[in-house]
Length: 160
Ligand SMILES: [Zn+2]
Image (cartoon, rainbow, N blue to C red):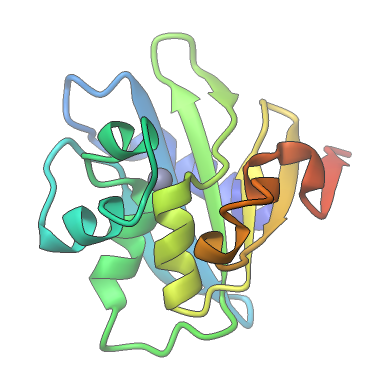
């Protein structure tokens, strides 16, 4: 497994999440091999989250009314650190089963990541595989819907 995804999995396992969270997500922002920020999902929201959720279409909007791990990670350092050109690593774990699932950033998070200049997202697919998503402007991809299709991501990697 990729080094930084493994790191995100370690953080994910050791973080104390809201007790009601069915899925535990962790996102880490990386630049030049250094960890710039770490974020976890939580139930609460704020004006930042609500602003970006309002850019999102249809059913995704309700789904996005909590703070996602990617948003937490950006919120923690925005305005303090230039995030242009960073990568983000996202893992998602169903805690009851202790297995990893698809942690691909949702449409709202894509808006956030695009706005802060994050260039790629690496995300868990399952315990052994991950995907890489190029962060494009989700607003420009509205018609094509291409950005919602996992098959269009840059590549899938198998763990070695
Ligand atoms: Zn999200």
